[in-house]
Amino acid sequence: MAYPKEKIVIRWSKKFAYCIGLLASDGCLSKDGRHIDFTSKDRDQVELFKSCLGLEVKIGKKGRGGYPKKIYYRVQFGDVMFYRWLLSIGFSSKKSRIIGVLKVPKKYFFDFLRGEFDGDGCIYSLWDPYWPKSFRYYTSFFSGSRLFINWLRKSIMIYAGIKGFIEVRGNNYALKFGKAETNVLFNKIYPTSSIPCLERKSCKAKHIFKQEQYNRIKNGLRPHAAVVKLANTLRSGRSGRKPLEVQVLSAAPRTTKPFYK
Image (cartoon, rainbow, N blue to C red):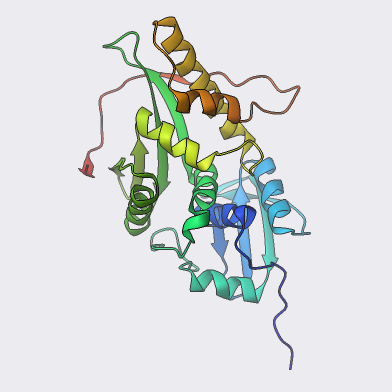
């Protein structure tokens, strides 16, 4: 009798938890009960996913969402044991709308959350048009599952002591955190510079925190310790790459309403 072969070593660690976060955002479980697919527009992200899980598979390209041009990178591999384990912690083959609570150990929750952020999260900044010296920034996590976004919010409240708020965007949900809560959250998910993360987003966040640090000094205020730490900890990108500019947007009227605060 042939037994399923195991390609992935199933053992919680910072790298492993990070990859579970990536799978929760941009992964897919095939209906055949065997294959796992991970897709991203960032080749660096796919390379990092492979490296963290110790996979030796080729990276392919594919279209997505009815768009025929192959602009997304992907890896696909078969591992029955890993597939079954993913099901046991809360994954499913059609997870986008029905994914809910995932069994993630408290010790590795923020490594998982960093993977979720790199897959389905963002940080952006803006100048408040009503208060010229007010530089604002927000962190958002997106999901098509209300159950999952509720669990994410509740877990962050328990482990980090911050609440955020949820916005409904059609059939999708956004969990958002303002400036003060972003400072707390990022110090949790980026404790050191040696952790696995998507460099593009780390670099963008670093520039935003440096901008905040500069603004407070310019206005005669002492920079927050949490912001100083993040400005020094977050990666600034590979050498030779052009530094990423801070995304400065105009504040627009809110077009969506949070279903609770």
